[in-house]
Length: 234
Ligand code: ADP
Ligand code: MG
Image (cartoon, rainbow, N blue to C red; front, top):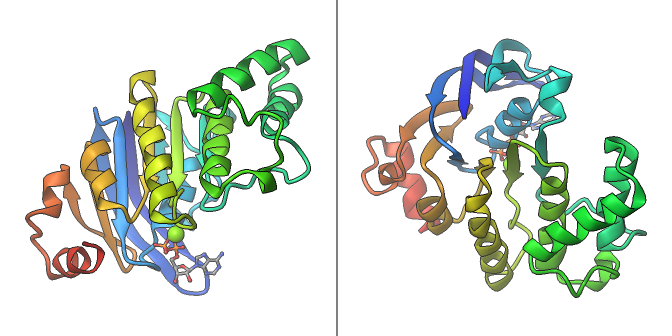
């Protein structure tokens, strides 16, 4: 994919992203790492077009991220699964496909089962989110993101509310998606996953990109900030 950030800044009550510029081309799996509060979620939300920057511009694959055409071709997986609590895992997907993508019931059913199966949930189709594990619910939300056939999937700390076993289960399932030919932009604190899955890493600190490059930057920090971060997460 191609990512272009041009002097991007974002302010809530204080400035949380300051003047980021970035030009990436040819990577398919970009990790954003950094301590809590460094601006990772803000950046990923801006890149997905969920929120508008205070100033500067963002284009991804040649589209300005506020274009309708772009918004229709991305999926977003949040920290907490965000599934509708009163719908089964399958209905959580068929509803989206029928209401927002114009699929009929039968098509929606086939697509929902295909992606839930891909995330190893074929025997959980008719359960409510509260009756499955946190890892299963999070995998269902990944299946939902995939079901609209996006070009890019954004994941913002998809395992932050899970224990280590469920974290591993979710991240392995994501790794299995590599063959789908989708692009991924994700925030995580699991450095093993960054090493295995990312082909580019952006390290943020206090609203700036402080280091970037291949996952090998994790092993050879050039800045005090990344060095300290790696000591904490390891
Ligand atoms: P990270 O994901 O790296 O933890 P965030 O992008 O969530 O960082 O937050 C960066 C900073 O912006 C934090 O100081 C946070 O408190 C602040 N912030 C995030 N979202 C909002 C918001 N909606 N309103 C006000 N401040 C916010
Ligand atoms: Mg965050």
